[in-house]
Structure formats: structure tokens, C-alpha cells
Picture 1 (cartoon, helix red, strand yellow):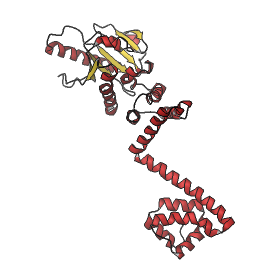
Picture 2 (cartoon, one colour):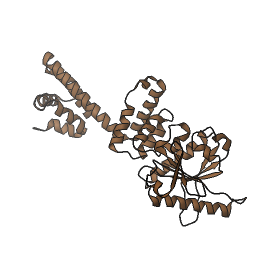
Picture 3 (cartoon, helix red, strand yellow):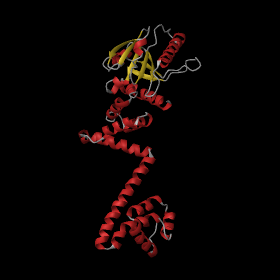
Picture 4 (tube, helix red, strand yellow):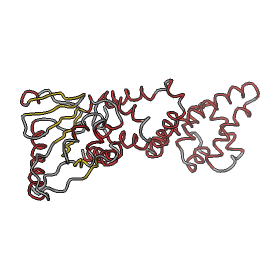
Length: 327
């Protein structure tokens, strides 16, 4: 889950200060000192008055100077052990602040736990109060403990750091929405790291299908940028698409060539096929090779010759043309 954690932390680091207008910043947590007890990050509140008009949970941050954040991405455990470990890290940070803060810290370190959803079983062992859409206050506790269910949070600019923790269809909705709010590079990074089942991938493809919104030049440009980045960073996908396009193009071209050949003569029909072979071997075909190509087109068919051009190296292609009875 290392890449998922990095995505969540990086998104908080990049987005928090921007979307809160500098009211809150993100700060990595230094090692607390209990062997290895480290939270995911700290939200340092600089200007609480600017948070009042942002979507929840940001208004709650205005009540504090610092918040410990724990992020659970899709696939992470959300059982009682995960909750208790988060509480342990909060308590460790609490002790650290009490021992090191100047002036002395006498408050209680709040905890925000971000996850795709709120587990039903949590309500059996703890008090759960819904305070806003996707925001739940957990008790009993002497400190603020908010559970942020990303799947239930509204799609809003200021909530993007929390929304990356969505899962399933809720993640698809977010991924589709965020393409109009963030650069294609942001979307590509997210899609490469966050795991998606086949059904979720198919659902996402539906959102990428053409819609009336595609008439918007800005949305069209974002879609093109995303496609360019996908092809740039996934060379195997680019090669696969190019190969498929070449193969289909050659098949169609050769079929058309053969139709013309039936009308105007076999030599005219061989022209596109001969051109492809000559480009691959880097020279003109000899008269014997022309003869061989004509014979094999009639015997093996255009599909087989199209495969030969795509699959063989130039050296292997020359050998194939000189072989007595290739398949």
C-alpha cells in the first residue's frame, strides 16, 4: 500500500494550502519516538477564520491549531486494530506535544481518520454522530475524533485531498469529476496508483464515453491531454494500439487492392502490399521476390501476409521471401 499512502500524502501536501487559501498547511509527521509510531500527516491551522465557509470538515479545523490525520485507502484494513493503532499514534503525538511544545500545550490533539466508508461495526463499540455529509464524530473521547467517509463526501474543490480515498463507483464519479478540475497529470497519477476491479474500470470507461459536455473546448482539451499522457507513460499500450492499427489498415488496404486487382489486373492489386514489404526490408524487391509475393498472396491470403509484415524482422522477411515453401 506504499504508493497509495504516498498518493494520499502528496495530495494533501499539494492541495491543502491552495484550497484553503493558506488557512491550513500540510506538514509531514516526524518520528514520535516509540520505536516507529508515525501518523500520516499533520494539518497546521494558520487562519481559522478562513475555514468557516468551506465544506466540512474544514470548519471543524478552525477549533484547533493542529490535527493529526490518518488516511486509509481502498484495500486498507478498517478493523478494530486499525482504529486502535490510529488512536495510539494520536496519543503518542499528544504526549510529544505536551513534552516539547513551547509554550506548554495543555489541549487535546484531534484526530481525523479518512477512509472510503464508515464500518458498520464501529457503531457497535463506539458512539457515532453524523455532523455533516460524510463526517462522523466518534466517541466517547476527551478529544475530537472525526471519521471522514470519502464515499459520502460531496464533490467539491476543497475536499479533493479527502476524495482520493473513495472506492468503487464513488471513486469512478470522483475520477470523472476531477478531470474538469485538475490537470490530466493529476488524474493519470491517481489512476495508475489506485487499484480498480474490472467492473470499476468498465464503469470508468462509461464516464469517458462522449457526452454533450464534450462540445466544451476546455473539456475536450483535458480529455486529449489525458490520452496523450496515458500513451506517453504506457509505451506498451502505445505499441499495442499502433500494431493493431497497422494490422487493420493493411488488411483493409490489401482487400481493397485485391478488389482493384480483379478489375484492373493483379499487378495493380499488389502495389500496396509490395510497398509495405519494401518499406520493411528497406529496399526495392527483386523480380524473383515480386513473383514470390504474387504467388503467396494468391495461396496464403492477405491476412497471413499482413501478419508476416508485422511479425517478422526485416532480415526474417527477406529469408521468408526466398524460402521455397513457407507457411
